[in-house]
Image 1 (cartoon, rainbow, N blue to C red):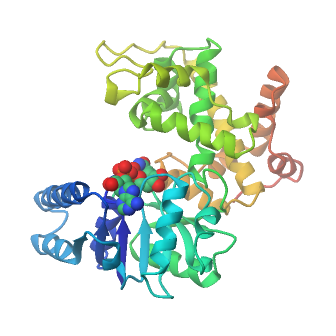
Image 2 (cartoon, helix red, strand yellow):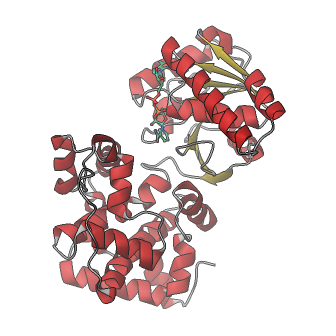
Length: 382
Ligand code: NAI
């Protein structure tokens, strides 16, 4: 298969590597020659490390590099069977690119966008043959993260969807099909991991270190929410939160926090700027050791995550299996949230959410109807 990747930044470079590793002939295009050279050099470093670690052979490395072509004109992509766009996250720029592409590629070529936050329908609408447009959303770093969300727009044909699923699966990725709604699966379902943790902090229940430790020791999450936000960067994480919130017509469940907004305004972007929630020039603060408090914090964040996952299923955003795979393989959650709900008991989830709602009377704590119904009918997700 001939694959074209547009944009040789973080994501495009990773996607190109995945496709070339899977045996595809890949053309990588970027408007910026420097970005292309940087990508080519970075691939050399990455593959050399893999050879050193004996993950791939020297022949594999040569094969991957031989299948990669770095091109400096859009017209060079004319023979592609599949184009994956990973350029700047700007609707007008993407729409212009997609409409130009249609004049270059064949009628059969599938045109995919790696967008995290734009609607696929709005990108597809820039094409005459909009049924060939689909969302193919990789996670960073693309060569390491197993999950890829595939998002059909209202215009996407069944044949395009099936071809996209088949191709991405053959690249040894786990596909989760998501409805074309804000945040798709991962960026929607993961919101409470950040927002509920911040809320717990804002209420003065515990400090960052204690909340992080609670999620790691009691929930087995690899990183606590504050560490993770600092790692992702508040420029990225806050913007995703705000985009999801505005895209959902200001549903209060997704309301961003002032705590995080102020960090962004202050330029405390997290690890990359030396300071975020934590100050990395100082010794890291120690968590308070209080097992009951930690358990409470963990359960409050967990039940909010479960509620969000259940609601995504309720609204047919994706299947239960795809929702669980998305969180374990896209953001390394220790368990699928719906499987976790079964384990905790649906009744436990409903009671916990109702207790929060009774305490606060805020919409963010309203229990998803699917959990309530399942509880009444004694059902489980699996
Ligand atoms: P980036 O800024 O690292 O790379 C973008 C590249 O696109 C740059 O090299 C730029 O020169 C090039 N570019 C911009 N406009 C272009 C055009 N009209 N034609 C050709 N090349 C053009 O960005 P990144 O982080 O790789 O993101 C790319 C896309 O992937 C965005 O849509 C983003 O939302 C999405 N995405 C990003 C993730 C991340 O964690 N960074 C995760 C999943 C999706």
